[in-house]
Every structure is written in structure tokens, then in C-alpha cells.
Length: 313
Ligand SMILES: Nc1ncnc2c1ncn2[C@@H]1O[C@H](COP(=O)(O)OP(=O)(O)OP(=O)(O)O)[C@@H](O)[C@H]1O
Image (cartoon, rainbow, N blue to C red; front, side, top):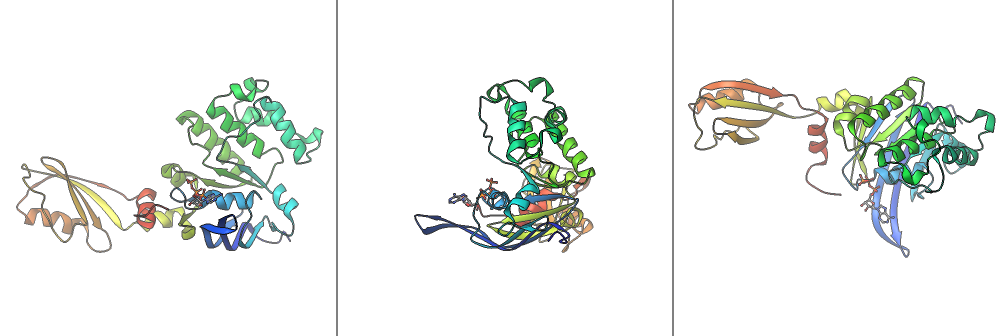
């Protein structure tokens, strides 16, 4: 049962939302995904791609239409309790009973998971989330960032081997974001598998060992972060020339060229088709002297846009 080496294994997963028995939205379609143990795994996709649906199925909050999901080797249909005990989920929506204090909220959550009193770690979790001085404040008096951190603490009360964070840094300022990621990295170093969704692609690129991108309910990429970033086909070069440009030079080497200033252009080109030398030669061939050049390496955002471009989900 737990001989599965994956933290989460998803096979042929599909979800069709229905209304009054009629299908209204195919949110996930034939998803196959293996999330390895011990890693920080990024689940990315444009708005409406299906990330929350997938996470909510793992959490047992949304019923799948078809397919199989195992969490730490436990099939969510055959062993729902063990599956639930193996995962902690930080939801996207902030929902709290406003009359409980953070400490009470953690104690209640621990009780729901059957954690014996002697094994509870409410104070340690509050400290890790920098909430010690709010331990006895009403939840309604916490700031948005504090509420989010309390959600992370709640997800960890039963010490699950997997922590899933759905957009944990939305609305959290930079300093707290940094603290949250430090905590997540520490948990990961202690052996917790982390799965996260975020719209901050720079953070995902820095944090995640491996990234899957979902678009329109399908997996369109699933590979180590470095390989994924290496897939970017577009490169960018900004060139300053020696005279005012009355019109934008055109050349088949350029995928896109735009004027940044009277003497400066930004050129996007496909690195598998042409190289920087050819791009610059195209400019000198148009009678322009090159004064300065700077290039920008493609990043996760470029790949993300290439893979998901054009259509809103
Ligand atoms: N209860 C529901 N009934 C009908 N359609 C739904 C329901 N919940 C989600 N959807 C639709 O399913 C699709 C996937 O939604 P989901 O919330 O999983 O996307 P997401 O990738 O998490 O997006 P975001 O980044 O905006 O949170 C969307 O088109 C959404 O409108």
C-alpha cells in the first residue's frame, strides 16, 4: 500500500462539473501526474486551468468524475482516512470562524485529526508562523497575511508528509512571503513533500525542483525546472543604434521588433532558428551602426507564456 514511491500519483483523472445533472464544465481531462516524494513541486497554470479542482480532489472536497488518485500510497477511494492523514492543504480561500483564537483554531483542527493532546504542537506552529503574539487574539482581528499564515499552521497540525499550498502568497507582502517560503523550505529539508500553486513565476522558478503546467484541464508540461526553462524558444535582445529610427527595420530573423526609444529597439527571435549574430547583422545590413546591446535570458515566464499563450481557460 505504501510501497508507492510517489508522494501523489494521479492516473486518468477527469472532472466534469455539472449543474442539475447537466455537464457545465470539463475542468480536468485525463490528467496523469506523479509527484515525487521529498521535493518542492510546482503546479502552475493560467486562471481557470484546473489547479484548484485538482487540489480539492486530493483534499476530498471535490468528487472526481473518473480516474485514480493515491496520496502517499493510499488510494483516496479505498483508504480515504489514511489519504487524508497524509496530506495538509492550505486552501486558496481564507475561511475562519472569527470567534476562535489562533491557538484554539489549531487545537480544534488537531482534535479533528485525532492528534493526542500530548503530541500537539500548536505553540511551535504559531512560533514558526510568527504568530505567537497573536495566539490569543480573535481570528477576525488578524491581518490578511496573518490569516494566511494561520492556514499554513492549520494544515500542519497532524504533521503530514505532504503539504499542499494553493496560492499561499496572494496578498502577502514581500517580507512575509520570504518568511513563508523559508518555513516551506525548512519543512522540505525536514522531509516534507511540498506542492504549491502560485502566480509568482519567479518564486516558482526559484523554489521548485520540478514543475507541471496545466492548461485547459490538461498537463502541457511536467519536468525538472531547469529543463523546462531551457525549453524557451524565444530570446530577447535590446539594441541601441547610432541614429534616430524613423521606421522599424524589418527582417525575417525577427519574430517581433518594437521601438523602445528613438534609437533603441527590442527584438525577439527564435533561438533554434537564428542566433544573436544574425539578428545584429540584420540591423547593420539595414545601414545602422550598433552602439550597445543587452540580452535577457528566457525565464519560466517565457516558457509559461509559450505553453499557455493566447487562450483564456
Ligand atoms: N463548482 C463549479 N461549477 C462549475 N464550474 C466550476 C466549478 N468550480 C470551478 N469551475 C470551473 O472549472 C475550471 C477550473 O477551475 P479551477 O478553480 O480549478 O481553476 P484554477 O486553475 O484553480 O484557477 P485559479 O488560478 O483562477 O484559481 C474553471 O473554468 C472554473 O470556472
